[in-house]
Image (cartoon, rainbow, N blue to C red):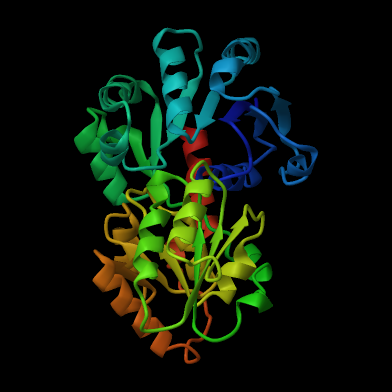
Length: 360
């Protein structure tokens, strides 16, 4: 049987949830049935060591899609793959444009990482973003959605054939996370330990969290922030403005954030908008409860599937403080068992993904 030729296109293997999901899919592809290439814009030697074996790596050595356009088109035309996969909006649109103008013949499989309606609403270029979604997304062959809520949003926002959208929950490698989640000793002590994991961007709303915490005097707390991004300096300035330098630690990017997540009493997510946040899924594996704004996309669906107290949805600062106090009062009585619903475990998601590759 002839092997299928697959190309995965992503800027980097480091960073956020979209990258982790893509790596998980890559790690579980049946190589005896597929020839797999991964195109990245740039990658370090250390990052190469995290790649699954059997994957043909193509490093463009460029900064950003604009500088890599010609190289990517050349590779796609010369290799003539059967399927091209992407998981980031601007690359999804780029591939859709290539398919529309018949520059490539490959089937285009994309994964939507955020709620399209929220992406449009919060974009600096609302009209352009809306047009890209409405005109080019319907032209791809299949769209992976991480939840029913996101699928509904796709259908309401974009005029796309419902049969093109397939729900594949974000794969979570439970065993690997548990093996690498021995709690960090430095997080132990008095008060409630709060963790944030994510890019330091407007979307993640970490500025909201800092402002809320600045007015809490009813209990001792500390906040550890794992991640990098363009708002790092502004968030540090905000921390200084409220005299919180001793309470808030900026830890930067961590390839293994799980010891910090497991060592925390609660993971906070105050995003302005979201898809299905991987940090929340990983916190549940570590047995760490979550406080999240109800606006955080598909997390509402996840909350309905989870045990009571695993995900605490809040709307404002008052709700946040109330739940934080409840978690603090239960501190010491919590048993850190996995709180993750079974359908989000890696095996079932990867089976669905492999099925799509066979049938597309």
